[in-house]
Amino acid sequence: MPGEPQSKYDQKLLHVLKTSSAIFAEKGYHSTSIRDISRATRMSLSGLYYYFKSKEELLFLIQYHCFSTVMDDCRKLIADVDDPVRRLKLLIENHLNYFVNNMDEMKVLSHEANSISGEFFRKVNAKKRQYVDLVIDLLTEIARERRVKDVDIRVAAFSLFGMMNWIYNWYNPRKDVDVAGLSQNITRIFLSGFLGDKSIEAERLETGRESHLDRAVSIWQQ
Amino acid sequence: MPGEPQSKYDQKLLHVLKTSSAIFAEKGYHSTSIRDISRATRMSLSGLYYYFKSKEELLFLIQYHCFSTVMDDCRKLIADVDDPVRRLKLLIENHLNYFVNNMDEMKVLSHEANSISGEFFRKVNAKKRQYVDLVIDLLTEIARERRVKDVDIRVAAFSLFGMMNWIYNWYNPRKDVDVAGLSQNITRIFLSGFLGDKSIEAERLETGRESHLDRAVSIWQQ
DNA sequence: TCTATCATCGAACGCTTGTTCGAAACCTGT
DNA sequence: ACAGGTTTCGAACAAGCGTTCGATGATAGA
Image 1 (cartoon, rainbow over the protein chains, first blue to last red):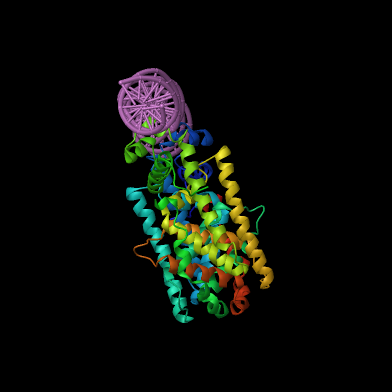
Image 2 (cartoon, helix red, strand yellow):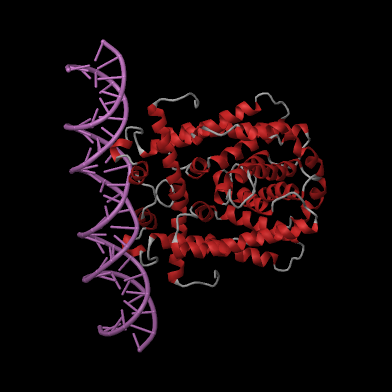
């Protein structure tokens, strides 16, 4: 969907999307008013509605466009790679690279996932499911190939997404390691964690005393 | 702070907090009106304001109370354990156990972190920083003890938080593995990932070609 | 230059929101 | 049965919200 030189209309729409993303990322979708966006884009309230039919559609446009780009880039990147481990590494690299370079949009994608509903929600979720399934398939293949045992694939997949998508909560490009380092660290932690170090496996069960598990039932449980 | 039999007032306050948490978790803080809470608790609008001074204070009370409990439980659990690896395992176990048993509150804690401001924000963040520092200290100690190299401690720490805190986005107690299994999986992935499997380390650098890193710069970057 | 389409705007509407206030109702110890 | 504090409530307010509408300006092909 993305690409091509773009008309005047497309350019301005993208400008609106980018500006809105920045405000959504900072204040959150629901705390951002169309008037905030109007002020930032220097357009009138009604002028904005020429580019989207509702505030929710604006959020959808941001999310859908953002997600499409990540997935298209990813597909291109792994197209002619066979080794599933390498495919996964490239996926992680691409995801984090895009995340860091488009922090606002990705934050909006990650954090406002439940702020859309109806048909909008369905469309974004369809894309999301494709992406999740891609990772699950990769992990399944890797697990078979390398004889990984005792790991729930679904837990592993979402652990990886957790590691990657959480970064908008803490990552500071000026203080922290750069994108390459970030990819390297996360890939190393997840991948050698998933494949498993046998020396760790040995001591894993020592801690499994069930007694702790019921300790932390809190005041909330009345 | 938690504990003790509690007065009538305290009980009702907790009931208000718990009910509000459930609605916040489902619809989000900003999309929830005091009228929603009024309906769910069967109290009047003004009746609610006897228990909190503002909507934001209500959110603060939920977050602060929730966080205090997690940390207190954690402290008790690791109080008389020396081995830093075991301390970390217990921390993970406690965190996930509490998360799964109090999904609503923990979702509100994780997802609405930026919905409070001012003094409220400062107070919650002070607690948060204590908790983060605890994990960072543990990881530092483990890294020294086991001679872990080439891992950024900050990245590792927040990767772990990402894995743990992301679960509200996908975990379904009825479909997925139970809490014990969840802890086991996440502990295994993170810990053996952090400690590192040397056989993985060998092939790590193969993928590091920089050429990919600039590929995914998207349309957003105009 | 005329015209049709594209792009923008000011002003307003109807609705929901968080919060307040003074008065009632309830409870408890005397 | 009374008094005092605790708890609850109905009704209202002001402010902000997303959205619409008809009209205006800009642009470009005939």
